[in-house]
Length: 215
Image (tube, rainbow, N blue to C red; front, side, top):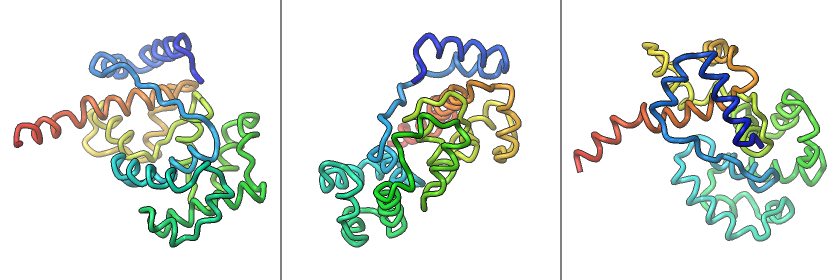
């Protein structure tokens, strides 16, 4: 994973490449540690986190990890789709979790060798699994494999933050996101982390304040 020294180098590079990021860094809290261990457990957790609030994902995750001990593909596959739905998963996510377990057990996906492959190869391997799209694969590559130049351009919070930072009237498209981030190679992972922090600390701050004032 990126060390403290490497992050400092990355932050300096990003600030020089795009002065708006230099401004953003003065407005946000220090970047939180986003590292997770690689493997089946945390890839499954990222699937659970797709398109739901963090609170909902965490509640489902607690029930799932209590039922699957140790958290392994063979125990996952021993639970039926209905068993998983009873733990709070949607029918779709129950199928996705079982599909991941099946692919690992059949060795169609070998997680332990992903660190040996380049970014495009990892993306291709992961997205062959039912239920794993670009976003899920990229979050895994960033958080679990420590890749430094991953850019999840389809992430809505990332789009909102970049659009706000650039004072754009509407949220940028994936194509615009990719274009605007091109100068930030090879540190787009760090740029994304800055924007996620900016989204929480700056973009969402007015709505949080209004909510607090109304209580």
